Length: 74
Image (cartoon, rainbow, N blue to C red; front, top):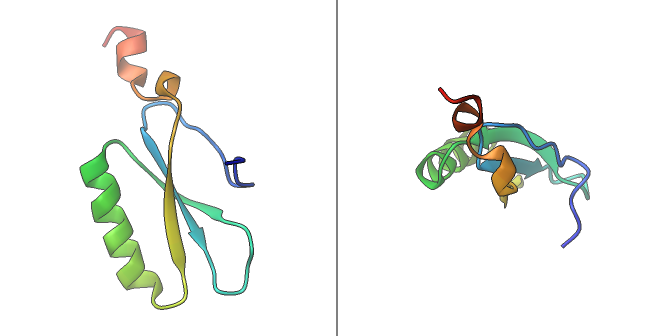
């Protein structure tokens, strides 16, 4: 799968959540999640807030982005 236009990895996160409006073809950045439980919680809340017609998906970011704190030794 090719990366969507919204692909923006950030350090300290494991997932990037993307949203697609009913009128667009491409996904846009929505939020980040630190773990699977947070991802599920956020997607559920966004589905309720955005309403019908919006599609959500998540991307598992490369492992080098997951733990920013461990890289700094904190």
